[in-house]
Image (cartoon, rainbow, N blue to C red):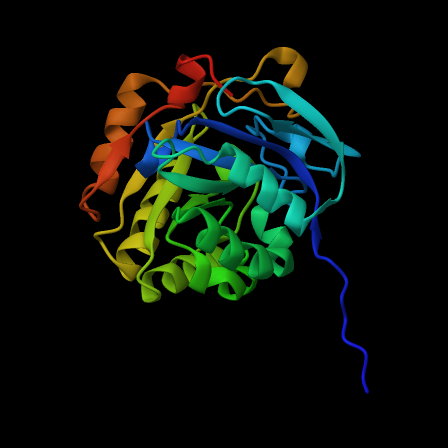
Length: 265
């Protein structure tokens, strides 16, 4: 008789908490956030650089929204994470579960086992926040997702360039009939030619896919890791960029990070 592999899947987390979504298509809705550790990108504007590496511990909110965190060690076994999400999931409070990071798709093997269970137990839709550059890992978990917010990384703003991967990623989402939107961080450094390229890329998949231009939230000097400061764009620039992209796309919205305005995580 062949012994079966009974190793419990684990994930490296940063935190689990309840909050109001501050970005993109789900802005203003209440979500359970599962923030995964690790990221393979190094965007100049990143406000979550603490997620780039795996911490030895993670923090878990006891009561949704009260910020009464408890500290636990990493990595976290799948059944324990299920328990934490169940504890957060008070009746009628949350609209969905947000997988965020870091880059959640670096945990794709774990997610293939975690997501079916958490959907069955909570009944909540699953929303993936991602850099949009790992189509192979996305394919592993597509059946368990309801919506995806994917970033387009403009080289002029982020220092990253993943055009081919973004195109494959967006096509996969569209072909799977997921509720997908694209988020693009813009700053004073934004190259309009890159925005036009982004618009054409999205339109080639479907001109109906919503695009969100998100003016960058400047980082405090102590948190900046780029020699070139990432500064917010001018209002005139944002209006011009929106008009440019609307030549190719039906929905181009401008929304800043509203959770920062609410002084929320």
